[in-house]
Image 1 (cartoon, rainbow, N blue to C red):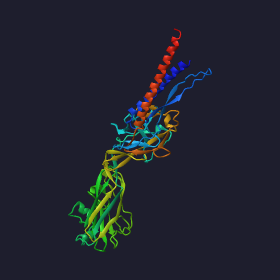
Image 2: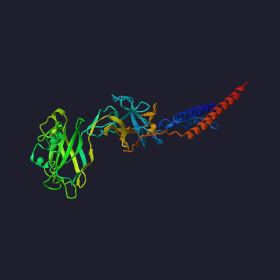
Image 3: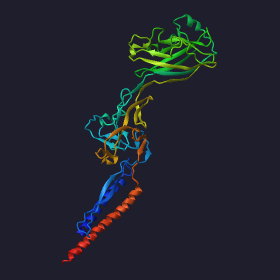
Image 4: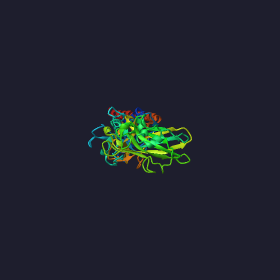
Length: 461
């Protein structure tokens, strides 16, 4: 009967508009939820086949929920360096636990990038999802597998131990005084083997006092710091020429074949314009030899080497002498720059736009930890929503592909940023009003149909 179909159509209108109201309510409630994607209920009509010509049976309406997962939210600045936002396609991969992940453990996909460091050092967001990434390999690369989520691991930025960087290069900038007088001890220095400048550093009563000394720190493989001096003594036999020695202070830090603590000795020569002439300088062996200090490991037969009692590894320190000059000005050290770093602990975390996560140490060292994986789907609107503003993979969403940030269509990462909700309150309030009116109209259909049925029943009375 047409009246019955009208009654049922009104009921379908109530159900559909109730669903629309629920979706709008969810949207409004999550207006401040990070990276929340609004839902929308669209209406589609239901048609009943007309069995009798000239009569109409109402079919009603059906509500179809549509997820706006692919809609981009506004990227907003955040104060934390571990707050992350994706600009473009893709999701962060999250797990429900940090350590001990297995293939059977579920993975979730989210754009809620408000990550913080938990008590165990893992990056975890407000919903308790642990951020996944490709761990750095021993050679500094990443084993990127675009289809295997099991190649990912929870990113830990605290349980890294200490960081040490042995010195590999030192740059020296200084001037030696071209107008300085010849030292009275220079003749003795030439005539007596135990009157070296290294001897003077150990005992001033035995050695020759240098005209100028500059010191540098060398960090060993264990993070220990050692003082090494470069001493100059003006030569009387030729202009623009200086005796030079490099030695350890104290001398017991190294084992050498020459004077105690002396790593090398020779002549440093300068050009007539005051620049150093490395082609004729013999401080590092033969004229023109590369300026460097090779130090063998403790306990080896090679010399010079680190003292056996130190138990440290070998290293070669490259020396940049190009900024050492001889001008008619007082001898002075301008700067000493070294790349070594003693023992340091983690004090911060930084994430690059390419997704590389690095730990910052208090000794200025930076250690790469992992690279964040971006998960993409052909139809992200087909993902299944779960609690915690996350999603799970489904067949309608298509095949998961893991990508590096900014590559292969994946979105780029915005460090110290968060993606805002895609909810527009003005649109939601407008929808709220229209939904309420539509619900009232559907209820009016039911009351009208009920009145007509009453009239039909009263015919037989």
